[in-house]
Image 1: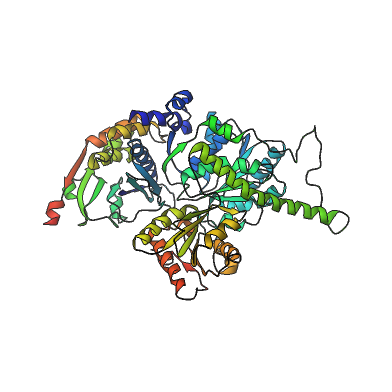
Image 2: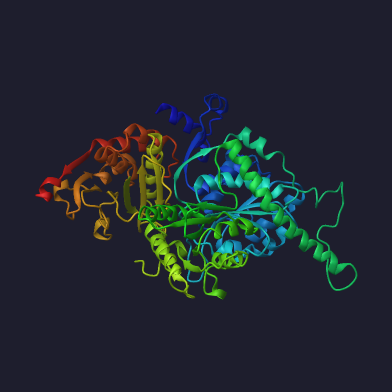
Length: 431
Length: 190
């Protein structure tokens, strides 16, 4: 009892400015520091451990408490970073462009309408090849007016060229923020990374997590390596982002070079994401599927495809179905961008039918975005796999084990009857 | 697995209470998931928070629909909200009220009623009806699920907007001391 509280004490007071730098005592005991917190606080601790030089934030629900935690950590001296409270999200990311070009490790967080307002510099960030890490605390789109969770924001910007990782648990949020810097700053990648965590159920869902040691994270991350390729630096003057392209001279080929290089960086990221996750597991003892998680898939006849925090309840539903003798498995996408084609095809190839549960809408296809991604991947599967779209958890709606048991039943039906064109709206009957 | 739902009004610290309870339960070796109900955060509006505790890890980050226990930290709320919705048979109510537990109307699913004059205690301690930490004391007394000591230590790790640590500790202790627990299971079963 006393031991637990002692472990808790060094970290638990930081938000109120009373951090106890009890480093040595904790290291000597080899006990992890325990936090009982939601994913917004966990993300802020991930930021602390990553030691960014500059953080710029503008609050927006459900990201707000994350911005507040980071600001409090800076105010309390827990995080030694420059904090810029910009007047809006467009400025937030523009400020970080300048900081990154000057060599700073940087962080921000946003979501929903804030991300929409950020879109112009957001669009430029990956093309500038700036390794900025940004949390998206996933929020649904308006209208109707809505301040709750959903992944419409991240899905809408999935073709912009950022790396996009989606977390299932609060612990994974903290761990993935740290890993994101290694991925972003890898010299074969040099791309910004979005670490996504679901608004509401993760952003405000409180669980027990473990806080890695700062010294071990320092060793894992190394020094920032941000602007070797493009710099605002009087000592090595260069034209950053000059007018490029057009139809004459070297323009077309130069522009293709940028686009092709960006695509190569994304493909390199697939390898780097795997390597970084493996090293994380070795050093910190927590193993996450880096690209695509397979759950009870090897002997499954059909499977659900999920993304984000919904996987928890979905796995419970899979376990319950297995106890009834139903041969169902689960695929969870952790890395959506770059799309992990090989890992996804390998997973899909194990089953005869899939039901894809999206927390966002693809208006153009009358289905969900991950459903479209899965259909594209199925083109590379040797056999035909019917693929049903299910949409749920919009605007903060709950996705419970019961919803996934229905999703499993709808997917099982694909083995004996044609796949419907219409999506299944999982919360349509909720009251 | 133990599932509970806390009811209160915006500004009373319902969600914060769930977070404090989560800290205390984790310190005593339990696994916990605490999720607030997402609505319109306004002072005075009904709010709720969910908490499940277990000896084993839990994966589902979801709301709770069939709680074992309902804690209501506002005495007027049962007139506005169906606080008993989904309560399992043999369930418990921990209610902020000046009434005696026998005088509180409950559905047949309720087997135990615990009552604490939380508003009275809060007025005594804070000068205002902030009842969340009082009702945590009442919860500990009624369920025995968490120790007063663990809750007391969890308070130390909490930033309070209303009142300081000393006041909240006193509120917790008084809530624990002045809670009356009434078991009606046998009569209902007969």
